[in-house]
Image (cartoon, rainbow, N blue to C red; front, side, top):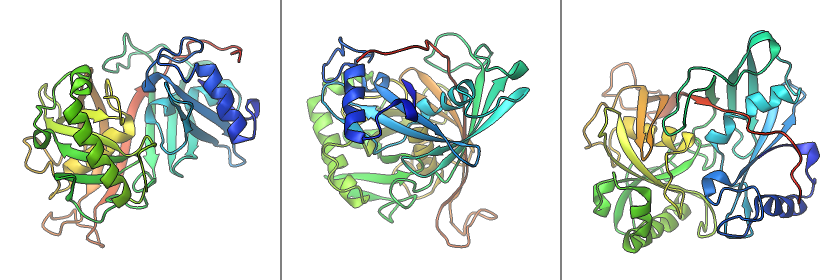
Length: 343
């Protein structure tokens, strides 16, 4: 659900109570609301104009079976709809052909530039762009991100290390728009190609993942994360279908049916930087064009990293630390309805 900020209560507590009611939470089926009974379909965007001509975007994760609303993370998938929404609501004037919308992500302080298809000054939703796991095609929304590195934790590698050990498991902690704990799937005794439901049903695996996440959250500067949605935990394995690498992402209690844009961009950094937990996995570790395989297909990203290693001629940064040079993606968004939701 996308809202203008002016249409919601200014008091966060009152606002959150309203959003829970609209989504139908807390209830596993969200039967008395507009939610889709899954964390991926229980999300809210709050949008407002800025004096510089851009827009502010606040993302809110509405829990399905608990009466909680969190602003602790960003969401790159919901971000894809911000540009079209801003143009349709008149927050950004439409241009002929393509309209650029500068989006300030309130949750993390980072910025995205969205290029929206606007023939004749109107948002077009029909097009030829395909997203794996999404039926049909739609108009592309091209997104370029700025300031994603360390946006939640203050550093690209929040612990200062490329490998840490938490709960007896080697991991790499990263934040390129989303705090993520990256694990070689084999380290947890799984292939990393299992269906999400199978992974969720493995109580021993889920307990191990959560134990790692709780320790990593403290080390990443996020504090006690037992009741929060970050960090995510992403299991990485060699690609199976011609991609760059394969993923299964805990978000954190459920396993993502695909992968979040920023989670994918964060794992892509780990893939390109030497000395991380995925360094020994087969595949091209230098390609900026990254195809992230996930349970329903793949997500294509452009992530270019200066690893900071002097051994890499022409790619070593002055500080010796990894630096994200480019993060971008192509997404789609389609308006389903526009109207009044009753609480």
